[in-house]
Length: 249
Image 1 (cartoon, one colour):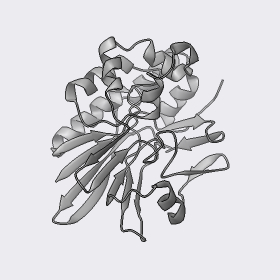
Image 2 (cartoon, rainbow, N blue to C red; image 1 turned 135 degrees about the horizontal axis):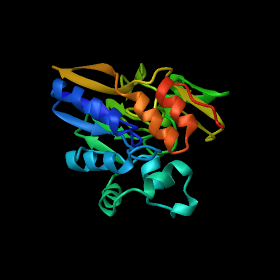
Image 3 (spheres, rainbow, N blue to C red; image 1 turned 120 degrees about the vertical axis):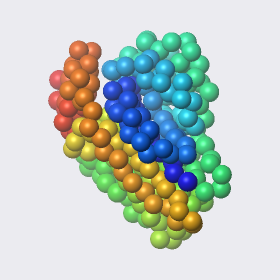
């Protein structure tokens, strides 16, 4: 069994196309998507069209939810840009997404934590950046979820974490389309991978053993940065081109 795990595409269709090309060569049995599909100053409708066509099991991320639970006038600029450009078909597709998905008895999919799409699982905000939480914190944030493998996104930072107490593995594949960002929730902080590559992960089961592989791919990030710059988002442009976030003005 081989599973490809993508997350946090954020409307970056160029990064998604590179990931899709690589996935074809890997020939997984299934592809799953952990959400935050289209929000961003890039190509939201083009991205949604690909995702609708492929119809993978897809979790609703917090930014997916923001597109359908509030009027455009109350959205942040990143979400409003996408909402104004999405077709009715794409918005209807987003409305069908579920907050969590269970693949058999072994694998649980969520965007943030099992009960909150806007809370980090694999990072804890300490000062201006996120850091790996301790095992006690991770177990508490799992809220009793017992699946042997928990796949989550939201942080954009790739992680494979093994919990000694339960034997569970938490996989965060990182972000397909946005390698860094700044947020003010729960306090102002940055998440930065430090490179502009597109990322996804593979999980492969042989017998009773799961192995994990992070895939780090080159694509035309200069073109993605230029699109963000054209759409008035300088900080996004730097993130897409360098993997670090800023400047804010």
